[in-house]
Image (cartoon, rainbow, N blue to C red; front, side):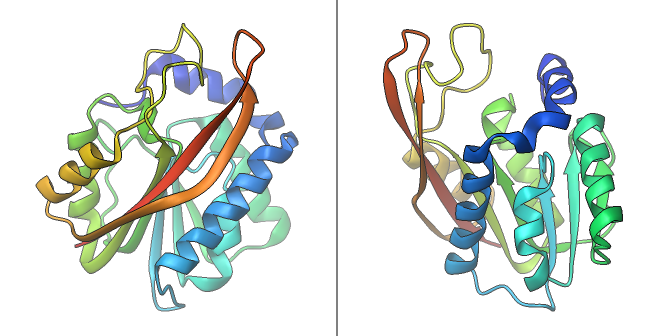
Length: 211
């Protein structure tokens, strides 16, 4: 199942101010560094970012990859990315509006697919992992960054997605979908106040698998 329509509309509304949050900027840099540390990326590789938002992670990675396709289901987010590409004259970045399940599927294959804080909005994790595996070249890499399992306080009571993920369960889903050499580590921690104004720490993990 695709990203919830309500979530897409929310991201459309927040797109123009998304980069105003310094934590998001810092997180994107940390995630890009973690990907570079874990995977030996190079200028011969084609990348695909699913749920790219305003493109912060891919812009950090673009000097190190041949091309990157930035995919999102939010037109508002993609409009921001398109303007960044125009202003900064990135020649190796292109955009695609899709949720990969009900929407358009790329015709090409990729050497690395990565997605950051997107999976907890996806209803059918197994289906999207199957799609990722299909889109990878042999010996390609998948990198998923998302929340560790939490009590629901990260998004609050009205959120209808996943409350983070158990790493062992995600590892099992990677294996089920044909990935090997699977590993994970904590790559960032978000510190924020919950609805009761209590300061909480939410670890993010990066999990990598190879086709």
